[in-house]
Length: 100
Image (cartoon, rainbow, N blue to C red; front, side, top):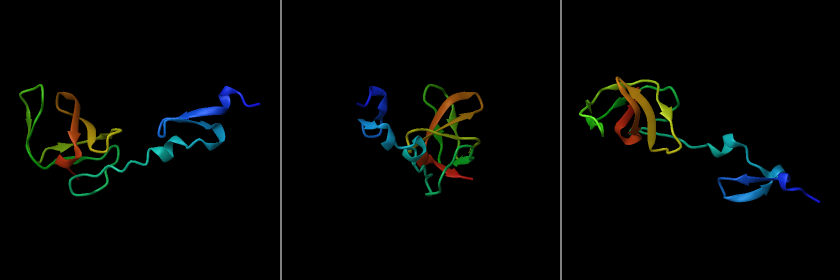
């Protein structure tokens, strides 16, 4: 008789699966994040803005050509998390950046 701990909840499919059929998290995270030019982005990459962007909640405008260093990928392939001079928690859409 199998116990309840022999099953694992698979968040990708929303089903309970036997522990032997569990998919490793690395295989589920196969999300490819691409910039405006189609280049693949990775954690720690530097990107350049391709247009002026107003930052919501501030009076700051990030100018075209601004370099953003050390980006972090998010669960959403269309967004990256980054930090810029005094703007914490800055999230940029990948359609507005190009890999350096």
